Length: 240
Ligand SMILES: C[S@@+](CC[C@H](N)C(=O)[O-])C[C@H]1O[C@@H](n2cnc3c(N)ncnc32)[C@H](O)[C@@H]1O
Ligand SMILES: Nc1nc2[nH]cc(C(=O)O)c2c(=O)[nH]1
Ligand code: SF4
Ligand SMILES: [Mg+2]
Image (cartoon, rainbow, N blue to C red; front, side, top):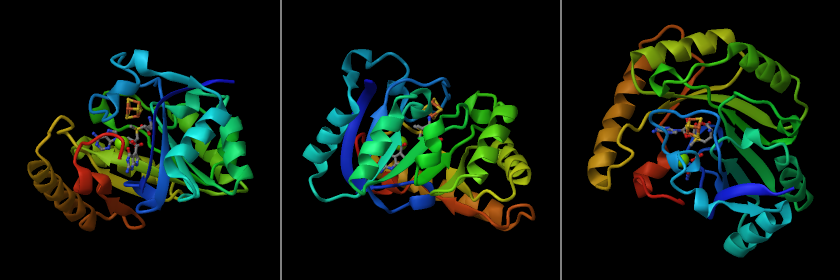
């Protein structure tokens, strides 16, 4: 079954979360059930690129990954949009595993798919208040419970922080799922900034502020605090 794809790129480094720095390819699917105010990939759901969506069979995606990445990769990250909207992605995961390629997934935790159990590095990124979205905690409970029973691979939570309300939301999530590895990520509110120097200076300051807050906090002990590493190298550039 065909999959709506907007970008296939790499090899690059995974810039975020549990496998930060890992050499990986990216497949970005189209469509999202959320509309986060600060989404850095709005083109996947705002209609601006609907004519650029390619409907691809899993084998075609595999061929496109090979055409771009040759024999230089063994890890593919599926992001979006929300790839968890697509039941048919399980087929792509199987094809990649058949050739010893590991698979990572980026999703917000609003939908479950049975193929989640096959993912090697699964990132669930629930959305804090600044996004304008509301977390369905019953659904998230179900997903985290299912992931805790998972036989294969790793999973983690990654929460983007823009303000104090987000910080408190992340604390609540951490206390609700104390056994889940938690990553706090600096929010980038300047997604249109084209001046890399200005952007990086700003993001470094934000990173330092977030680190300072976490260091003084008694709830956040077993936690990791990270920037989006790719923005330090390439700013807001797409496809990297
Ligand atoms: C574009 S989303 C796609 C996957 C999925 N929809 C999700 O949100 O997890 C990939 C990651 O980028 C993060 N993200 C999006 N916009 C961001 C921003 N302006 N600053 C920091 N992280 C951002 C999301 O929270 C998510 O963890
Ligand atoms: N290098 C790089 N790392 C990333 N980690 C998560 C990304 C995403 O947009 O999902 C992303 C991305 O777009 N590029
Ligand atoms: S859930 Fe992810 S892709 Fe969807 S709007 Fe939010 S950040 Fe963007
Ligand atoms: Mg991104």
